[in-house]
Image (cartoon, rainbow, N blue to C red):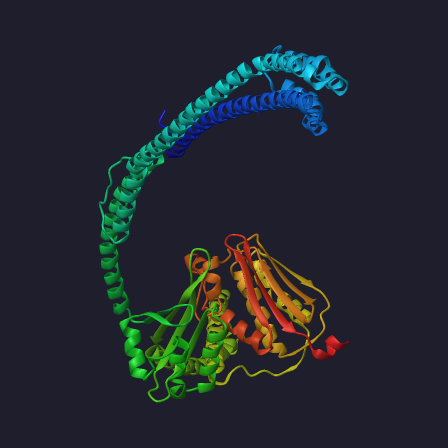
Length: 620
């Protein structure tokens, strides 16, 4: 099993610590040995001193006794008395210090006997006996006894001195051994540290330096950098990992270089595509600063004299004075500034040139829903608006010109059907009825076209009065019941009492009638159409719901555009002009209301109209 760097460091440290512990134990043992020998030496010296003091006290006894015998001077008994008092204590001290043996007892006995059997009797005798008679005998006996005591003490002193000398020599030897141990330990420890440092320099530090140097080279941009895969434990693994990383980085760098070439090629293609579009396209960041602008938008801004400084909104506001409606233009721009997440479509006209521009803007989001900026498109629609104007004029003119002959035609048809031109047979009546229905349809179409034309020219003119939405819904159902029966569609009215609204009854009836007619038109036989009227809070509501073919969700936002017809209607060849819902929306909004739709293909459609109630009714 390959050891890691940490394990190797721990093992090396453990070896050093173990050696230091062994060295410490050896030095400690030598130190303890020195202490033991020192104590032994001190004890020997102390016992020699104690023996010497006993010997001195004995000599003091003998000297004092002999001097007193010779001189009869009592002052000479002072050393004798002092030695006599001190001798027992000194013998006890000697007994405590001397090695085990009979010597201490022998000294105690002989000293006691010397004092008791000789010294004290001699002193007492000297007090009463003539001096000359006692001196020779006392001196010889005393000397003999002292010599006996000294014969015990002197060899002991010589032995103890020899033992102390031997202990001192042994102490010196042990101290020298301890010094050798300490010196050897220092040398070996130094060598171990040097060996370990050299080992780790070779197996860890040097490889790490190579890796660090290679890392700096990679950071500086150099590629295909590799290091020798050497080193202890993790260091070697790090070298292997670095080489793997370097090789992977080199591969990724090559891939990125290839991708950059592809991206640059794609960017050039995208730039060419953007520059080739008709619309001006601009991308700004979250702060409104321009990030990308194609050639058309640059040309348009140059032609309009737009500023090139500041955010996109500031640049757009720099041409405010040129607009046909500067206040509306500024309001739209400020709304964009204060609502960065809003998508808008606006149309503006340059008053000086008459050019009309349509602008669209929408936020750009990343995958997480965060804002990246905003996309802006600018399209000149001057020609389209001119075509719309010409179309509207054409529609108005044609509609007006068609309405007069249609009225005459329908009048003469009515006269013929009533027999003023002679009796008609059944087949002629059937033919005339078909012609009359077609004329009515054409007249309704012309009426719708004129309605839209007048709506563009003068707006919707209403005759306001009191109108009840429940009655209007009920009458629309009654007037369409025959058509429902002919189409085999169930038509029902679900009407509640609804307070009156302030509005044009005729136009509201036209609105509801259009919705009911559309529902019947797009509901197959066997289906059901329900027309409802009820109150919802502050609004009177009319709903027309069918079980017809439905409208695709993607097309529901365009239902109220002129001439738009859903794909389901065109696929099934259901007739229509695409103006009914446009008229319905105009009527609803002219009353301050709204119209909306919910639908699912194959399940049906529901149109909902909300008209605000009369304030007096709300107060009631």
